Amino acid sequence: MDDALYVIGHKNPDTDSICSALAYAEMKRLVGENAIACRLGPLNEETKFVLKKFGLENPLLMKDARSQLKDIEMDVPNFINENRSVKVGWEKVAKSNNRSLFVLNDSKKLAGILSTSNLSMVRLFDKAKLNKLMSTASLKAIADTIEGSIINEPTLFSNNGKVFVVTLNESRGFEADFKGSICILSDGHQKQKQLINAGVKCLIITCNEQIDYDVLQFAKAKNCGIIITKLDTMAVANVVQESFSIKNIMTTEVIYFNESEYVSDVAAKMLKSRVRSYPVLDDEGNVKAAISRFHLQNYKRKRFILVDHSAKNQAINNIMDASIEEIIDHHHIGDIQTEKPIFYRNMKCGCTATIVSLLYQENGLLPDEKISGILLSAILSDTLNFKSATTTELDKITASWLAKRANIEDIDEYAREMLSASVSLKDANPHELLNRDLKHYEMGKYKVAVGQTNYVNMSDVQLILPEFKENMEKEQKSKKLDLLIMVFTHVLAEGSLLLFYGPLAYTMKDIVEINFDDNSGYDKDIISRKQQLIPRLTMYLKSL
Image (tube, rainbow, N blue to C red):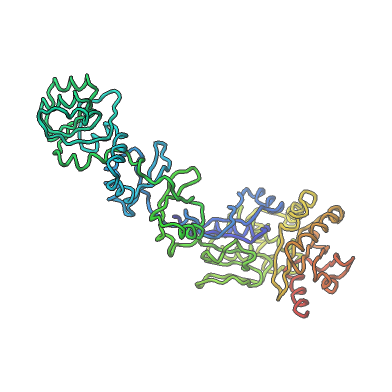
């Protein structure tokens, strides 16, 4: 498990959200953190332009803040090949902490699980079942189990699974019993030849007794395997019937998890079973770890730094199941709560990137040319080239400082180039256009959502309005909003066209400067959703 620190902006990310995450993650890496910049959705055209211009990759896409199995500590798995004997299974299980082994096939993929329960059942099998299992044992497996050496190995070895300890000398009438069986004995030249002649398939010679040449030749002629072991007869008798492979007794219906599954989901699934240890696989089916209920208690949660937001409805899903380490924001203080004190930087300025730039300086660091470029871009985007009412003197000073570091000679020219890139009204469908920067608000008992985008020519807006209005009305109803507003703002901050639908649409006639009809209007002074629209709307709805 690594100790990653995820730096992430809000849903429907804008340029400030993306660039502040990238820049702050870089700053945290410079001070020794394993910081990773993340995003909560696709990039808009403006942000794509910025990252391409300054040669930076997209942040990592994340959808959920919950910890995944690959994020937490788990056990190193204990493996055994499916062809190993029951005896080897006992030996390996005894050394395993959780008394179970993950069984792999020859392709090293999961084939089953071997537990003490599986192994113990062998000793409860009746003779017929045990004989059937022993009939599957290879000569090599038998030799390995009894620590023996193969003296004669038939081309095609088979046996009926019956095992006898032979103590008789010369006798008659036993041939039918011993035919096809495995016989354990020590010395006895004549005895050995009798058994071979009776059709025994394997002689196990104990106590390191040697085989005479004529017996060996006779065994070859009769296709009888011979194994010599240093163990005595009783020791061999105790273990020889553990020679068959574990694939005959392992559990094949295995409950397993993928390393990408969320810990909370896995915990719920575990409640439905009583397995001691579960295999954890990667997407290629390779076993990566072993997990038990113990690992799901007090596990280390994913760590996050939130930039450009502090409200749960703007944050990554299930953020309250993660560990919030810091919040860097220039909006109102939202409803996110933490279990411990954190570093929280909230300032009244036009852009989170302005705060990030200050934090670089406060930590004795200087952003490089690329980082300076994206921080400047974020400020110009959020303040609409300083024309938004949210703009502060600090934003302007910071932008000037960043422009020098980014080798941007003409800020105004670059701002026009960048802001124009954000306009893609013709390329987006109505749903995408509405939702790519849609923010939700709880205003008392009312549910409100406000989207915003920029435009260059009003003719482009007029072209999409019929279809856009139709979709907007449908989405207001499907989202069950009291008021849904869309703000089309001129890139040079020359005012905004507003559309509004829902039971509270009538309230907009007292907020917007010019009303075209019951669902649209224009206001030359509304540029910033946060600064000029939301405060007015909040005060108005409180008076209802």
